[in-house]
Length: 298
Image (cartoon, rainbow, N blue to C red; front, side, top):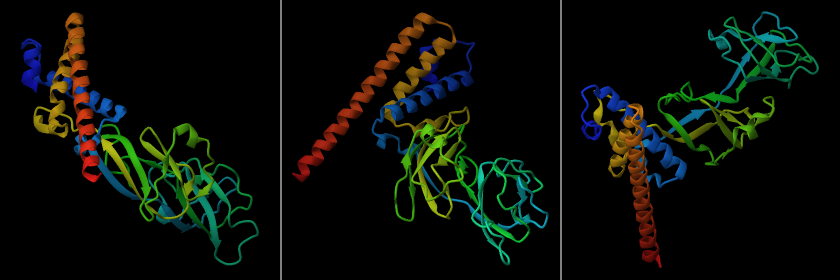
């Protein structure tokens, strides 16, 4: 591919392989974006399909002997994280008491806006009944960052592209993928069994905070692997039918970067024509395949 791009740009001596590779990677990204946006039959992009399983977090503990206050509490030592704000946006529920619980203590639910490496957590609203060292609790998580355990399979900025489906493994039930604005207004202190989710940046968020341990499977698309001078064969992630379009896209990007407006316009037109022709070819093939299946079963 580098040879083709270089030849189309006139084999200039002031251009390096690194620049050709950067333009090819740009073209590949644009191609995948178009394919997903137009929902072209994804069977041509199996190399970009992935799935991962993760479990919702439900951690139980008993409060540290250090006294809680009206506006916060101390985690038990097992759950202390050295990462500041590790528990930001988590939810705590008071679930029990060693001995006879004070009236109104058990059942309180609070959001954790921030946490310290010492184990201290602030809460969104003062306790109605302040807990002590005999207080038992559960911690729940509503926001799950991509690229961080338990969703640690892909780096969201270099490889993770888009969520295809999220389902609960135990019963196969699919969660509704909603726009972010339909999710964000829900109260984090609402706990239960999620029925929907949204993606926001590098995180997914449930419509309500899961308060039970359950396994979920997320199907998603990743970015194609980036080309480099030591890995020029990685464009095999993209089906061969699209390779000509990748080259033409890189040529267009090259003319644009070199500030050659006339050639850029011509290259852009050739690139768009190739994308349109390839798309039409794939759609026709899909239609013929559907017709063959219908004829076989009628």
